[in-house]
Amino acid sequence: MMLNTKYRTDKPEIMDNFALEGEILRDALDKIAKINQLLGGNQLTLRGVQDLLNKTSTLDEITIVDVGCGNGDMLRALADYGFKNKLKFKLIGIDANNFTCTHAQQLSENYSNISYRCEDIFDKPFDELKYDIVLCTLTLHHFKEDEIIKLLRVFHNNATIGIVINDLHRNTIAYRLFQALCFVFRLNTMSREDGLISILRGFKKEELIQFSRKLNFKNYKIHWKWAFRYQWIIRKD
Image 1: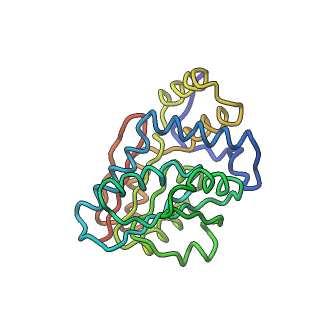
Image 2: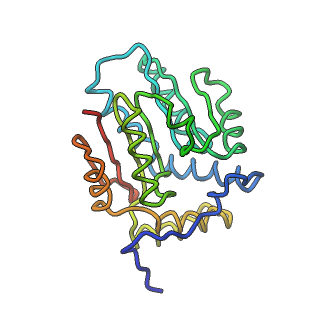
């Protein structure tokens, strides 16, 4: 079957249902986190944070927000990094699904500097939230173009240091490799179907550049990374 990846699909994912809960969702969240670890996704986001901090004067406390935090795996990796490097992090996970936030909180109970907020990022409370760095790992592709523009504008207005985005490269090879990955990791139906849709909702580099131009970002860089990811780092001027 020929696969056309020229344009982003607007087909919804099962996980876009914020009322979703239960063991199937828990299994999907944990396996997504595990796959992200194994494929270097967490390290990709962490290196983006390091890049922003390397050129920033040391702050007494650095507030980092993770949008679409899932089971909180990225925040726990950041907390461990901060502890090892004597950095004082205040870490906040945002997710619109209450079951997901509860699960993440349970997994993070040993981390006093991590908290979670269940809210829609297009509502006023998130619009008013301030932070130094905002992360968006495998989340941006869930939105349509006008929503992405709106969201990136909020990120840029409310961050003092910058933005780290880690998202999927829309690519036929990536799609076929994920099909093989589904078999190896025995992913459930929801994870399998959503993962394939996610790739088709991913991005081409030119699209990320266009977003940057529309929003007049002056200081940004976009790098292709394994496994078919884009690391997009936007630094505040």
